[in-house]
Length: 180
Image (tube, rainbow, N blue to C red; front, side):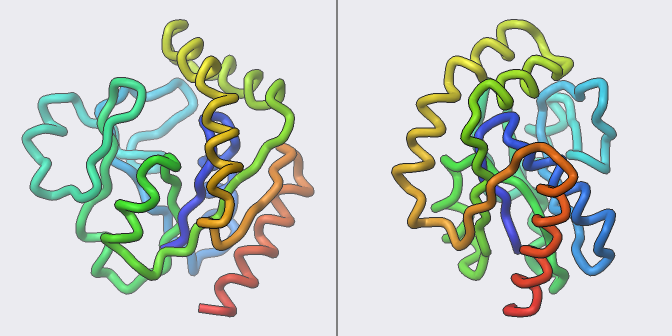
């Protein structure tokens, strides 16, 4: 398991999707959530989107359930026994719990130093205005928290939201895959 950790809007999903499209030896670790699907997302490709009732009725299939921005997130247990290499994304508050469940997880902190870049990415999302404002208002605190805990990450990757960043990310993943 390789997990991308970063604040909302840091490019975790974009980098995960780019890498799994480019390297067929890496599979997407998809979260299950009860949040509404955004206009540019696809059920079963980006995440599994369930209604709150369906999410609650299927909890026995999940592990690592956590709440973030008034929605539940989890992973299917079946991913952890498949023997495949997965690349997923996780909110930083769930790292310790995830590593307790899957000790050999490799973590990559997706760092973006320009808060205006992150803010512009969040504003492009198809979510309600209150959620957008909530995520933006939490950015500085979350970025500070991640920087304070930087030693817990196996790797730190600087994302500048450009093609060079995507290609550099592929190089980093190849290095990681050679080491595991």
